[in-house]
Length: 248
Length: 243
Image 1 (tube, rainbow over the protein chains, first blue to last red):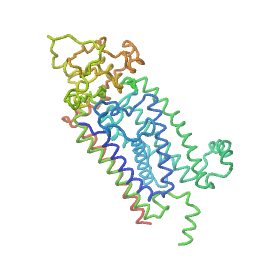
Image 2 (tube, one colour; image 1 turned 90 degrees about the vertical axis):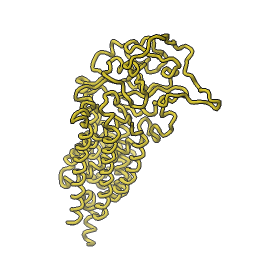
Image 3 (tube, each protein chain N blue to C red; image 1 turned 180 degrees about the horizontal axis):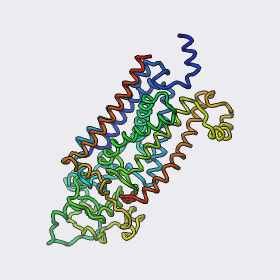
Image 4 (tube, rainbow over the protein chains, first blue to last red; image 1 turned 30 degrees about the horizontal axis):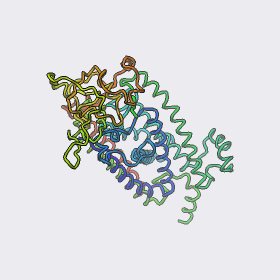
């Protein structure tokens, strides 16, 4: 007997509502909203690329004849090719990892606590992935090296994505810090237009700060892709499971 | 107090969550709610893993099981066709150009009846796996047909069609969009199998410890995470008390 995807989707929606309320008290309304939107966008972009690249898909229930007669059989809310529930799950995992890491290393350098957050996220996904794969909430198509039917690339991806995202969030929203070489790029690009300001990040108002935050998240996706690509190539070479051509 | 507040306002960008801003008690309460929600999420996955997924985990075919093919008006799990108001089946699922198998004297062996036909598990979406080892070509065909859109009812036709597993020649898949983009069979057989083996296979883990390997794995990982979350929670609450 499978746990229908509707169980997953409903549970995640309920957990997200409770979690969001708590996180709002913890971090403040605006900062939590920034984390939520950033996490949703960041995970959505990464997962959309994964689906488009044929690494995974979320269509098992939608393609199943039985569930085509049962409207709640497949995911209900989609953001393009990725279900909303998956992005919400990523938000909960990344926020929890970030809070735990900050609690354990309150005075550490930002990258150290974010590295710890990435490690905690991997442990989360070591529970989530096997259950998700067994119940066909998502399916891995990737040619890769697998451990317990979870691609190793997925574990590295969870670590890297949470690390990159939480670090950008921490540096931009909490510390409001300019980052060496990146500051020059920012000054010569979007700070020149449309923001038309030369202020330091710490002196920006909230709206401008959010612009900087999302710009950095975009660069974060690029950095993440650049780091994960060699791993994908390596695992492709030593794969213990072949590529499954997605049939969509 | 007022000076402290001004100081916090000035340096609010350098404070840490759960420590200074927003209000410490409020932040600690929020952390408690969030982390308890996370603990419940972990327990939710534990329950699903132990109760619902453990039997499936011990079966190597479940992870790569393909969805039951879409047929017009047929519900495969129940093994019946939908009836109209007059009690007649809405669809017999017999495409006009389908090659009708003529094997009246050949009854399927138990292995054949459970084996995937047309690359799919005969059990459809029930999660009941094909018994015994599954050949590479079967998985190859089945997985390539994954998420195939509505076909013309190859599975529930009136005659019991038992195709030879390694002979996909007669399978009416010419119209399948999936097949159009696939590689020839010879090319596909190069490289690793699509079925995971050894450490890659979840079923091997599940068979450890007298068939409770997967449950133990989920349980240990969950306990570890719960301890970590609890320690973080107690630290945050402790910080609130000391402050």
